[in-house]
Length: 479
Image (tube, rainbow, N blue to C red; front, side, top):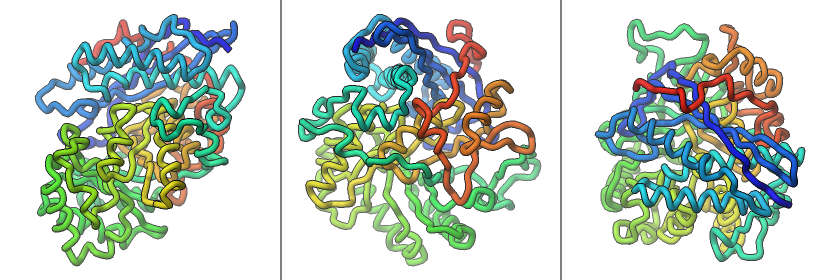
């Protein structure tokens, strides 16, 4: 088989949040979403694939003083550069083509002095569009292609311990058709109706406070963001624990997002042990699934800083997220004493597949069931990005996925009526029309039904026309 990328383009749409979302050093109130379209020749026949993602300021680089408009333009440049590299690249497999684009983007990013997490963001959008084009050409869903290794993935390229193994041997034999939606509780989010400021009540038909969200969606899994300030976090966690204890009907579970708050093992250990010493939180913390990225990315994989992590026998289950920036980040993290990583398509689909395979191989070899892959991507939105991410995690066996784009944005209200109609027709199990007329995510008993997603080429069951959005060359932000 010969696969050749012919050319591609980038289009954007500006989005505004219905609620401000505070994460770490930033509060998001608006952001553009970029759509990458790739034209591919597969054995002489043309196929088209599309990928998309929000351009979130202050996530790829946590530089407090850098202006938001500079960060957004930097992200867009990264995306456009990857699309430029991709034109003309060819290979025998999708994996071969991806490796070439990845390597070119990696070299360019290093020369520019960009963090790998940022520079490879562009490569992942090309990767996703390429995968979708291939799946559409074959008429086969992503899960089937990855299990049968139609993409030609060589797992040993990520970790030598996987030499001779294939994804089909290590991934679940069936993809998930239901996934638990893990609701993120942001640090500025109203917990109860009484927390909503006078005049701040929204009238868009969607829930606003945490209590309302639980009631509306039947939520049972939560992601709780902390600041690293022990007094402040203790009081907030006590309040949240009480609310969840009174309001959640299902099997309650939660994760803690450390927000890169700590720069030393000693600092985090002292913080965690003080939290563990709060008697009123003892029963609540029995429901903890894991702690995500407690250490700042500058030190999170530093062997000197984290010396002794493995010797901390009572440490919580820990995963990396922002620190999963290189192809070898997970093996490095596991050697230090972490238990796993997150998957999000913006960090790479094939890398996510390899990471899931490595964690499963380790479970089988060691008998240790504490190794974990989670699904994280808070502001992930349809009509493309959310669905593609769900299609991938469904094939990796992830059971609980952070999903809050539907909460911080008013569904797909910002998109043209044509797009709204197409997604309701193709994905009526995942989306529903609200009283205001636009589609929003459909969550029942805290779960997402994703049959239509799993059966689509790469999550999306219709061919979206990206030309209804603004070409990157004409788009200008004013952030």
